Amino acid sequence: MSKKFLKTILFLSATMATLVGCSGSEESASEDNGSIYYLNFKPEVAEVWNNIAEKYTEETGIPVKVITAASGEYESTLKSEMAKKDAPTLFHINGPMGYKSWKDYCIDLQNVDFYDALTDKSLAIVGEDGGVYGLPLAIEGYGIIYNEAILDKYFALSNAKIKSIEEVNNFNALKTLAEDMQANKDALGIEGAFASTSLLPGEDWRWQTHLLNIPIYAEFKDKGVDDLDVIDFSYSQNFKDIFDLYINNSTTKPTLLSSKGVMDSMAEFALGQAAMVQNGNWAWGQIADIGGNVIKEEDVKFLPIYIGLDNEEEYGLPIGNENYLAVNSQASELDQQATIDFVNWLLSSEIGKSEMVNTLGNISPYSTFADDEKPNDPLAKSMLEYMENGKTSITWVFPMFPSQNFKDAVGASLMEYAQGSKTWNDVEATVKDMWASQKALTK
Image (cartoon, rainbow, N blue to C red; front, side, top):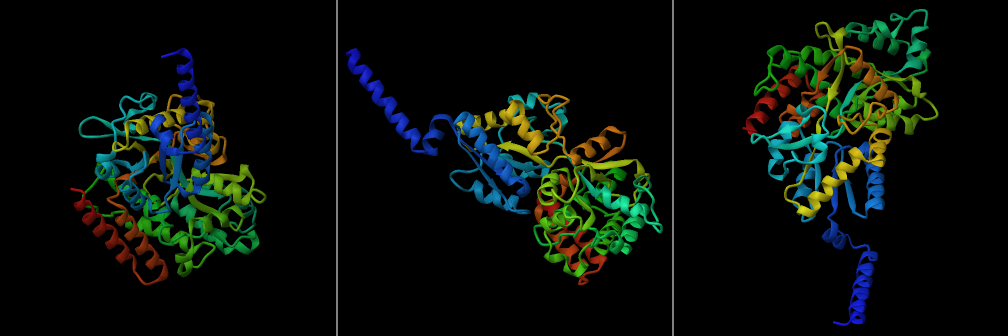
């Protein structure tokens, strides 16, 4: 073969490759370098993940598709997407229970760089064979978010029953504060002490998951276990007390809460219509976007969710993780490696880490993040203060809740209770019966 002919062939090959690349074909990109499809868990950060995907593609040329499941619909969306030809390569499993459902779709991550960088290996989801099948993206916390400016205005009232936030370290004090603020809402210029308790189906996760976590955690702790096939729901009254406090001292009448979503609740808080709202550190972006001209960053802080436990003044926030990253074992090896590289980039590159810390507001459990690489938003700072001041964090046990069906049933029962069509005994029966029946299905 002549050199001239060889050069011609090489030139034509390069030209064809360029034309194919310029066509924008994800299929050809995938064939060469793999591609990534991430099924996102949190609707409130959907746009953030879309921007991260664009930045990664700009830097590497690897296509990243991000689809975000609707609130409360992650499991059903995952089942639907996994049945497709182009299934997610990166997805979430909801703790040990989630792993049981998706273990046939999870690769062993023991040999990936980001597992080596995990500072506490006990945070990983480990299979019966000793393999590592799920890794946390971040450590998160939730509690009662309060607007310090409104509370200070209340404390200054001559007839205020609580005079400082330091007095609020148990349920009785929280109850007194909320009810007295509700009684003085006109003087404070608010519509309710608490923002709406969102009970719209699919928008009720703050109660049927996050709030319910606390009484179940207390029962597990009393019995020295990390799971139960049957629960006594021994802290049912405590759960009722805090739920009643929320629905009876908010911006919205209890009978109308079935029409409220999480964004309604967060908007009420961000716009100064409510003094308090239960949510997690991930909510800062929503608060800032909605109330940027109304609420000051330095006024947004956390208070623990007090429900009347023994020695609860020693407790801080519920801290943990439920969204464990998993890589699809059914994807091609090229796509698996592309996905692993993407997660490594998120957790080790300057751009990826900046997005994790400054945009997503994540507190990372990986050694690739230095001490000064922590979120600067007020909720992350408040969360870290509770973690570092000697308070006992409440463990997230809700990854052991039996199923989404269980949580949906509890949420529906809470909604009917708020509307007055069910008694608390009905709610208690739903929690216990659905727990037992759904746990039996996992055996």
